[in-house]
Image (spheres, rainbow, N blue to C red):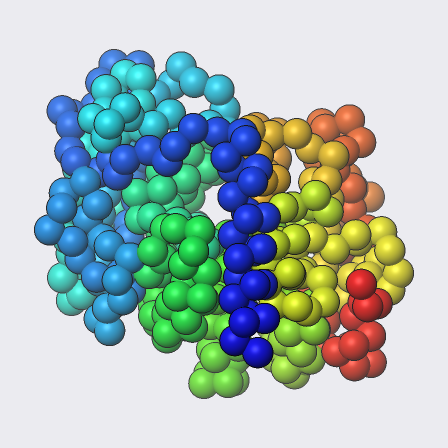
Amino acid sequence: MIRRRERLLFWFMMALAAPAVAGCASRPDPALSLVAPLAEGASNVKLLVATTRRQSDDPAIRFSGERSQELRFASLDVSVPNERPSGEIIWPSGGKADPQKNFAATRFEPIPADKIRNVLNESIAKSGKRHVLVFVHGYNTRFDEAAFRLAQIVQDSGAPVTPVLFSWPSWGTLASYPYDRESAAVSRDGLETVLRALAKDPSVSEVSILAHSMGGWLTLEALRQMAIREKQIFPKIKDLMLAAPDVDIDVAAAWGMEMQGVKPRPRITLFVSADDQALRASRLLWGSRARLGSINANEEPYRTNLARNGVEVVDLTSIKSSDSTNHGKFASSPLVVRQIGVRLAAGQELEGSTSFGERSSALLQGTVRTLGDVVTSPLRLGELEAPHSFGKQH
């Protein structure tokens, strides 16, 4: 059994590493050492950070991949160069940033837990952005990578939101999948705490969640815990966007069944891509059925169940992006990230004859599709007959 697991892990690493080695250069150095104040030709994105990572003494790292039992907070300013392709992060060479050309950190400040609410309220008061976007990153992600990704999404989408990064302890290596999975598990309470605090804060009008990959699993677990503890998912949590979620299809269906009696529930948008190489490798490792983020949503019974249960699906299979694994299309495709901004700016349920996916389709020349009729109802995934009815065996 151990040898079989080792073989699966080996092939998992090979499947992930192959496209990365073929398509891109070596990983950039950590890059959160502070540079001079904002340069001309760059924009400033202010992030609030909540993390279950252990603090690092290295200013280029700030928070390591080690776990902490204490939820920590910080504020971080990221300088984003204006002259760059939308959807791309321009990394500093050797970790030394030129803010006119690269993403760069211009301010970092740890925040005591008893002060974070004041900082949040001040930030909202200055910006006027009462809609909070919580970003939960995926596996194999360093803290600086998560911060730069969120800054890129906010800048490119033009979303009028106050961005909050929830960063959980990932070692940021291909071989750390088992460690990262356990780290996500121990971070459920931390994420639930953050979401509860935001939902109860009078200065916050609405909370949206954008969760990527393994962060999707973590987010579903945290919302499940909230529903059990509070007998509800707080009404201010209105939007949940799951981008390439690394979640077993039966686990997703079981989660929906447990949410059956929970009202109100957030709207859910699911971004899928059948050519996602990372999720293909994850499925190989687990030896399980399809991962939620890579299903062919036009197949039955996925098509009928998703449409019937109020889940909007945006199929990105035909979208081309700079991500060689096809796992980060939601952020690296300029048109897709722009449509995320449109969704966040709307701040309301979709109405009329056109859904989010169909509006995207018009812009993306038919490469983004939605399933079923217009989706304006909350998630009712629990109406499925049984977990195994969600999809067929692959």
